[in-house]
Length: 348
Image 1: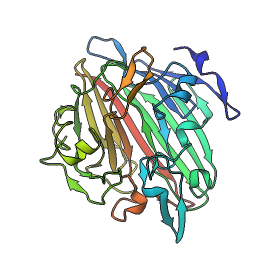
Image 2: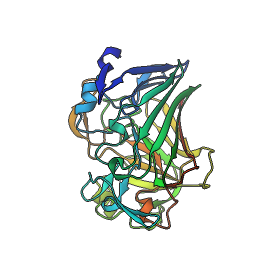
Image 3: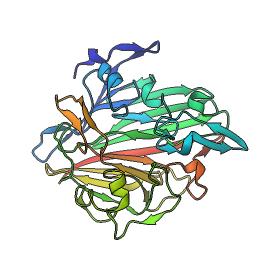
Image 4: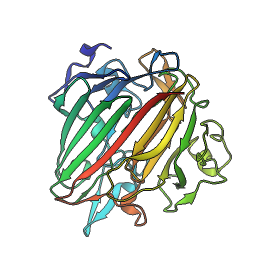
């Protein structure tokens, strides 16, 4: 990896590339958007495989057709219906960037800002960002810390945030995974199990209907291990409308306020790599890269086309602020937002 290709200045702040490494994993992260540029894990033959899509220079990230590769997402990940919400009797309008809706924090979300580096070591990196009151339409000055830490065969990603005014927050991390290696092509033969018996169906515009539906007897049933491609082209309206999966699943066993990560997903690849996702969040978004256009050329020189990767985004549910039955994403002054995701890599 060419570190110098990430040395630049964006919005008056310096960008760099950092490396975290231990006996099991090797991770490269830039403070531009807190992006994971590369994540190497061993396959069953001991070969180190880069399992996330990304680019070999900062310039390519800035110019990319897909703007969320490997990035921190916020303030509010996923969609806010019509970019509008009410909080403590006041109506707010956020930046609209996905049809009629706000997606992943608006036009310039956390993926497009330079994060300050608080500390860096061989196995950990802590970043900080101050999101100003009214930034992208959100109320309150918010201070966020994002920490990446290697612990044996696990990558821990932790977000902590506080605010000086009541606001909303729903952060996630947007790795595009291909466990056969970035640039390896379609992911439909890779397998997935989700610890989720329910999901949140969507209107055609991508906003939840408000229903929490059973996955059983639908293409959304990943309660047993199955190939991603098994039901991806099913005639079900939800898979047809979104050309695959781009849906939030209700993770079993959620306890509001708990900081204890629990198992949300396991993915397997034919090369023996097994990835387990653990999180304290109530939901996880499965996205099968349906909209990857093929315009972006990745680190291996291969174009990133539709279904060349999948995302597993820990989160509160989409449009939670406008859905009274969904877990709350409201953060008050004096409270601390805490979200953790663990990506654990093993060989099977």
